[in-house]
Amino acid sequence: MSGPIREARHQDHHHHILYDPDLVPDPSVSLFEPKHWAARDELTAVDAGRGSAWFIGPAAQPWVLRHYRRGGLPGKLIRDHYWHNSNALSRPWREFRISARLFSQGLPVPRPVAACLTRHGLTDTGALITCRIPKARSLSDRLCDGDMDETAWQAVGTVVGQFHAEQVWHADLNVANLLCDAQDHWHLIDLDRARIRAGRYWAAGNLKRLRRSVDKLLANNPQAALSAQGWTTMLGAYRAAVA
Image (cartoon, rainbow, N blue to C red; front, side, top):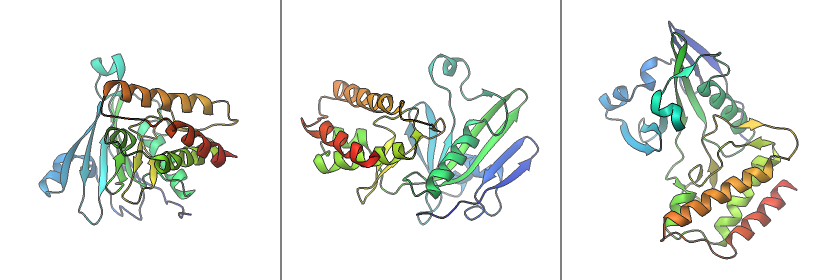
């Protein structure tokens, strides 16, 4: 089990930072600016769908910096601003805190480093830094590479079951948000809308969402393949993990 993550706050005019003092003793807004890391020659831009994300930091302590972006129709009109409600309800605050909670419980999520919320009158922009999962490959990548045997599907079912056993509902369980490291350990990312929910009525919907994501990938990528037994193996491992 991982130890508890300490939480501290830093406020600099309209910038509000939530951080783990064990990883960032003296945070500043510059940590959340790609140009800061580029000037240190410690930045590599990466594609993150509709958002913006970068690998940052020295090789000995690699992090991921992500700026929150809106999706759907709102994202076409307002790229990265969200109506301000409160710090606690903002996307970076929620993701930092649930990630810290799950990491401290020993669940395989990226360790949160720091979150930043910047006020712009009635709106906010936000960013999050997490520890990087070394040599990570997504379920999407593995499917496209034909690298998902029965053992891998069993591991996916086990990790999804571990989260559901702890009542963790993931708002967007898909092939991009399940990452496998170099030791074949699976992790769940993109937790800003994840919630701890009572009961288990929501679990089937989570699994259906993942299956839709798999089917969409297969339909759009002829080289991707799902073995006849793969999904069945995943479900069996999932049921054992939540039992």
